[in-house]
Length: 191
Image 1 (tube, rainbow, N blue to C red):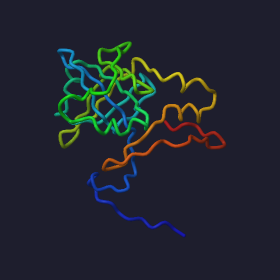
Image 2 (cartoon, rainbow, N blue to C red):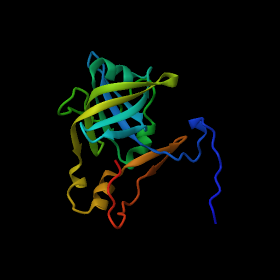
Image 3 (cartoon, helix red, strand yellow):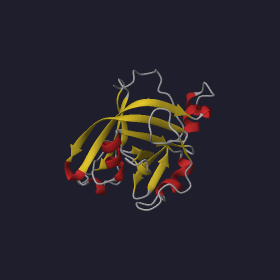
Image 4 (cartoon, helix red, strand yellow):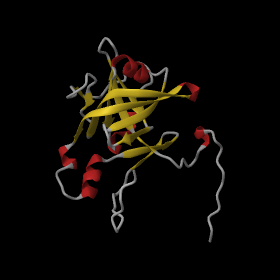
């Protein structure tokens, strides 16, 4: 039986289900005086093997963007799905660091969040301005660290299970990555 498709509006807010999901991360930045900020983001992606370079979406008015533009550095902290409720309870204003343990990063001024099983330290590469006051911030990865439990086994499925990654769906909904499986025969990775 052929598939039947339903057109969704072009307004991203109305996409349900959203056909493109975003991995949930916490971006740490510092302002010019050294004050730390943390912000949940779900529009993040690797964009280049060479660098390597990653990017995330943000609004021009957010502290995250203002801090990156002022200092040129940020950290992408990757929380596990067991932290999802804590991630979504981070307030938009006030003390956004409650319950988080900040430790020095290796190569940049913004700290890493100890509760997160992975961190990517980055230097700002460039910013792409988008309509509606939004930007896509690109950064060269200068250091990567993952919890040793994620590399303590040869089993790739167990490595990803140890990271416990999750994605944002919509309206407060999220989903854990689930069990990793391999396609046979092994394909060439997409570029």
